Length: 433
Image (cartoon, helix red, strand yellow):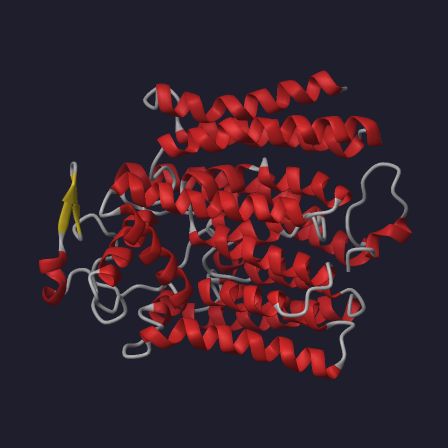
């Protein structure tokens, strides 16, 4: 049993070096697919192992993650070009300008342009005519990375990588013994490795901050959870759904204190950027963009775009209400299900959006999260097409393969609750809620 898992971990560890040594021979789709298959094999065996074997496998996995994390520094901009925008926003802020005031293509910021090797900024930034969509919490992270990197491209990546690794170590340290099994499942997933460590999306920092806030709350901390969750919301808005987790079981006075700390943190982070529209081009993104959405692709066959978005918003609200109605006594379960439902009803679903439910696995292991990490690999079909000719096409068969199993898993999660490890009893399923 243990040797099968070591082999699975070895396959995961080899994927990144292959991409580095011979990127022309190993396609991005192949790397992602091999990692996904290895992760499925490892996760299944881990969950079915005895307590003794699980402890051994967790230790092996944690040791294996060290070289994987180091190798991720050598690979850049694999599945997304978002890092160009991160770099530009951070540079603009360090130069004393408000990143929300101008789009990269505006004449007012052309004098801030610079060159790194063969890359010229702001020319390398995608969607140059749009202002940034990243909230102030993300902007402070970009600015910090740009400041300590001293205008070095690799230094910027190293700083962002350090933030992610530091957050991961703190998150792992806060997990108890049982949670660390699921923590290993999360940190060895292709979503975390490829989209968190390699592409360094801000979603991974938002997810880690949310997980840390919840774990601090579970440990009985009174002040830190509200501050940490407040900053997580300032990085991206989705963690707002986790607020009820921090409030449950506390006195009215404590609840007011947590909310006050959260709002104070949000205010402090937003304040330096209030001279301009902090929502940037977010409205355009919300109303116009669409990618990798099974529900959108189905509804657009019968309704116009604006009608589809309204229907999806209503479906999301109904689904979230049903999750809280079914699991109102388990806010962690209700929150995790709400996030999955919200993503299912989103017109845009990039793989890195799954980082939040993945990081929540140690607290509330959902079948739907695990299934989605496995099926989202079909995103590579649209990505490969986009990289070859600049046209994004969501293949209907790929969408069915990705989303239908997730919907089925959500229905099972709604009825049966969190997934259990071998030898665990159903009475333990609410222990982390």
